[in-house]
Image (cartoon, rainbow, N blue to C red; front, side, top):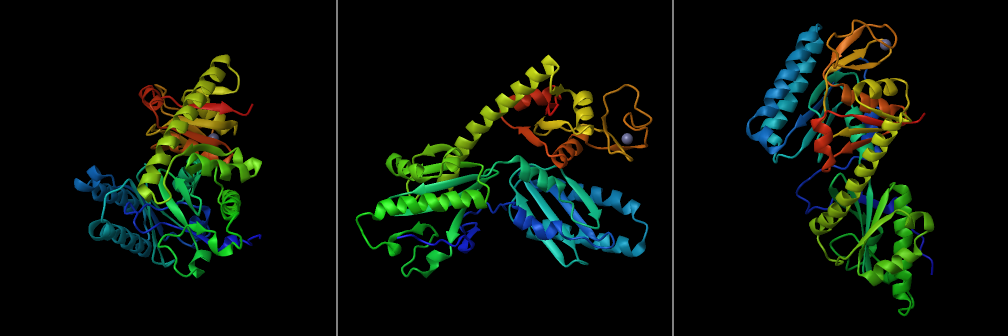
Length: 400
Ligand SMILES: [Zn+2]
């Protein structure tokens, strides 16, 4: 018999025993923030490094204070200044009294005027900064969201299947609200076929089919870019065979696992696979950039060439070692970026002649520009990163 699955009834949530407590970034979680805009500046966005060292030495609070000071100097209106100070205090108090564990990056959006207080714990590094504006400053989060691939994980036994989303090194399990109607339900939220089955004989067959169907539909709905199948070789093969061809092509690996494996075990297995895949992708992309640049065809290496291509909207793929930062200038008229690599700093924008303002980091701005012109970003994290970082290299594949 066919089962009518209502995917609206399939929720995703972090399982309670995950004490790392990172937040998943999805277009849905960010939607209320992207839509928010106030008539005056009243939203504080804070990106803070909360790695153990920074928290233990109090650096995180010191940096917040310093960043706040430079904003305070530029806010002339008294009322606005008071509102700003209040938001900064809220963030300070959070750091002082509520931050329980160090992590990687803490992102806070705070606005009394908009009745807004949102905290995100992000498991990857994002540059520290403080922004005071009419709307939440989301670009760094959107950049991160774009850079990481979403892995769907399907764990299957003969009777049961569990589904996970793996993203930025963290994992969450899908829980099924449908399953809640089954008396005698398990504590966790996997899918069990039994109650829909009249004939015990083809029970398993039907179960593999349904599992494949759920996987295919979740893959579409939640944009699983890669899929990992887990379980015994035999069970995994059955599910795979029922997956539609387009979905089959996204299967990145098959891993042995037990249906009762805990979340950490599953995460570690998928993480190892993800890192191996990511290293291959990085190596391939770096080689493509170097080859293209050497041939002088659709490739760029170094700040001058890459930033010119960014300005012209020609970057298809930007390759940046994680942690690379470089000061420079941004044109106030055309948004053009110039890296500080010349002995004589430019007096005007080389693209349009407009006035320039100093910026701390042209790399970050270049990444945002590439994304807004439909390009993608490869942040190097594997062994190849160190070599690129040491040489301060930035590279790009170009559309034309
Ligand atoms: Zn310009």
